View 1 (cartoon, one colour):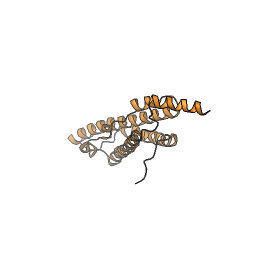
View 2 (cartoon, rainbow, N blue to C red):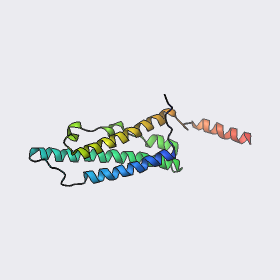
View 3 (cartoon, rainbow, N blue to C red):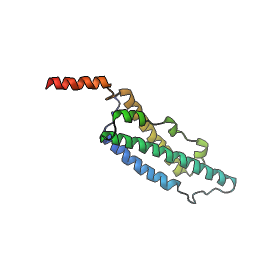
View 4 (spheres, rainbow, N blue to C red):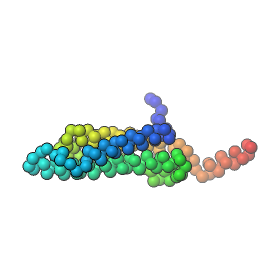
Length: 154
């Protein structure tokens, strides 16, 4: 089994670019439009499904971008690792969707919803592995000890 990839600035930047493109696609797909081709009661259900999944998908992408922005800020030294670990969490609930409602959507929009779910799942796996590694998660005492050792060595 291979080692999990550690998060680094290049990975975050690539994912951030991907998230921006995907978010733009989501915005275009869920803008109020005449995409509903069903008639009668099905049209009302399809309209509700489009609104509900549009809100879920947009929120999912907003959370993904916020997570990526937190990591970018960390790598730029704008926030500490403590702040990142405590405020940069992803919710696993954001990956959920309603299959019955997705089935009412245009197939291209349903595929886009699934694409955002897969993207979010990738971020969840990265976040989970990063939290498990505890990389750089040294205590204040450990950091003080390292500083003292560096001073003694010089």
